[in-house]
Length: 303
Figure 1: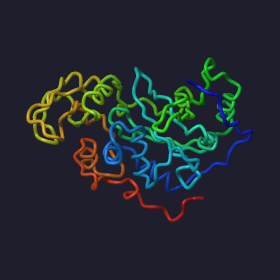
Figure 2: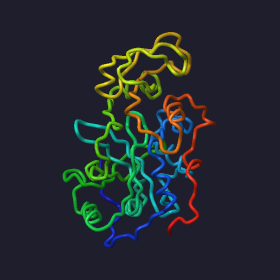
Figure 3: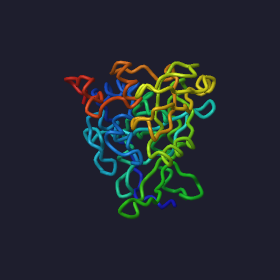
């Protein structure tokens, strides 16, 4: 159920905030696999675990419901999961903040980081300021009916562990112009497959990266045979695989998905072997390569 907005929109543009250090981190984040850190930080059923992983990689603490902005209380960082639908790149609605926090300050200056929904690998980033036409368009939601006029910003009632927890959301239609252009590294997404994996196994699908057209390969975690239809892998860039015996704890219970290695972006801040090991769940939690450790902090942050 949608509720009325609690915070009036601003009447003037906010000041622009940039940071050279954050810019460098955003450029280096391309090719970063988030799933390893997400698994180390939270359970597979935890909401926002990949956003928490991104915060960790940036050297930040997770405080999504807090009024404080993520980066130096100047810039908010938002992870947006994207996928291919036909010839378009799409995303879901995005939580901005809890309903008692001012959403206009949260979206005034934002670094948007985009990750492929299937692989959870970062494919790009951009920063925006809520100014000019962008601010005016979003501010117009104050006069719209939250149920019938499809506003770009809305409050939605949610049930949290401690009771009702309403939150502000941005509609996917508002986010659409910010999304990266279609690219081979952005795959289609099968929500039924992921829902079945959580329901049946309590974990996300286990990924294996392999060359396209390969119908059989060895599981990188245990060495058992993985079989997949090569044409499906070529067509979609990923395919469900049958895992042969034995089935050690690293591989069972799990739904296995093979990903075409050519569709995984080259990493900027780590070796390809490190990237693939993290993507396949082979990196010990205390050895996950952290982005902030790989990107030198500049002497001048530019502000």
